[in-house]
Image 1 (tube, rainbow, N blue to C red):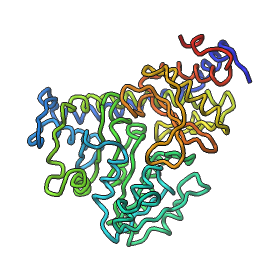
Image 2 (spheres, rainbow, N blue to C red):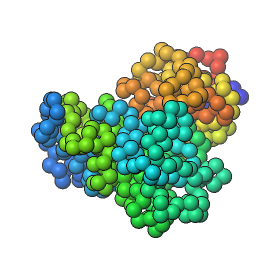
Image 3 (cartoon, rainbow, N blue to C red):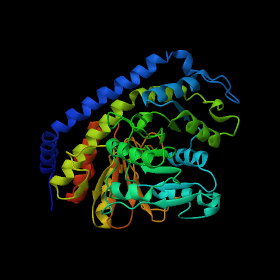
Image 4 (cartoon, rainbow, N blue to C red):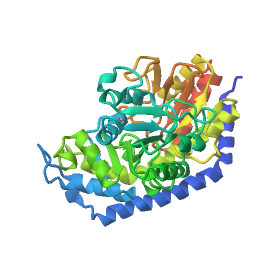
Length: 423
C-alpha cells in the first residue's frame, strides 16, 4: 500500500476525531493526579531552601528529606527513598528485591517471566552467582492465562504460607501480554494477603506512574519502585529512581543501596534536588501528553492495518504502545523514521546491536535530551518475531503527531524523502 502526503494527513485527522473521548478521560486523570502532587508539595512546605545541596556524606540534606516526603505523600505511602544514585530502573528494583529477601525465602512472579534485564537479577539467565538465586532465594513464575493476562485462579492455587514476596510487573516489558491495571493489582494483593498476611507485595511500577488515578500503594501494595527517567521525572530529571511503600520495606531497600546503618540517611544529591522536585511536579501533565500520543498512535496504526495494542479505546495502565510488524524491515523503518523526527541526533540511523542484559539484538530509536529517557518519545524492541516496536513517551502530543506522519511516510511512501513531509 502506498500513500501520499495528503492521504497521510487525512489518516491523522481521522484518527484525532475518533479519539476525542479518550482525550477527555486522560485529561480528567491528569487533573486528579496533578492536584495530588500539588497537595504533597504544600503539605511539606517546599521552598527554595530545598533546592540547595550539601556535599560529602550528605548529612542534613533538607532537599533530600523533603523529596522523600513529597513522593511518599503523593503515592500514599509511609516512606519513600528518591535518589539520583539509582543508575536505572533495574537497579532500583534490584535494591528492593535484595533488600527484602533472605536466604531460603521464596519470590514468585505472578505475571510470567519478568522484563529481560530482571532475568539476570533473579538468576534465570546469565551468571547466577550475583543473582537472587545465587544468594539462596527460591524463585517461581506463575504463567499467564493464554500468555496474555493474569490467571487469578492459578495465583490463588500457587501461593502458600511460605511465599515471602510476590513480584507484579505492571508493564508488559518486551512481551505482548496485557499490562496489569490498578484494579488487577488490588485483586492480586487481596489473594496474596488472604493466603499469607506477611507476604510482601512488590510492584514494578515502571511506565505506570500517573497513568491511572491511583498508584499501587493506594490499593494495598507493600512496596513499589520505578525510574526517574521514566514517568515521575517529568522529562527533566537527569538520573535516578525511587522506592515507596511501607517504611520497613523501603528502609531495607535503602540499606541495599547504601549500607546497613546508613539506609536512607545518607547520599549527597549533587545539585539534583530542584530538578527532581520540578520534574515530579510536571510529571502528571507530561504523562498525559505521552498517553494522548499513544492513543493517537493506536488509532493510526489500526487504520493502516497494523496490529497495535492496547486498542485506542482500551483503559490505560502504562504509557507503552506496541506495534507488531511481522517482518524485520518495517520495524527498522519505523525506528529510522522515529529517530529522524527526534529533536536530538535526528541525523543518525538506528541499527540493531547487542545491549547488556538482553539475549537478542535490540533496535532503539529516540533522540532524547536525557540518555535512555523513555518518557521522551522513543521506541525499541528485540529483533525477533513478531518484530514488535514498543513505543513510549512524548513530552508533548504535537511531537508525537509529527513523528507519526514521518513514520507513515517512511513505511508507505518510501520513494519520497522524509524532508518533504517534516522539514
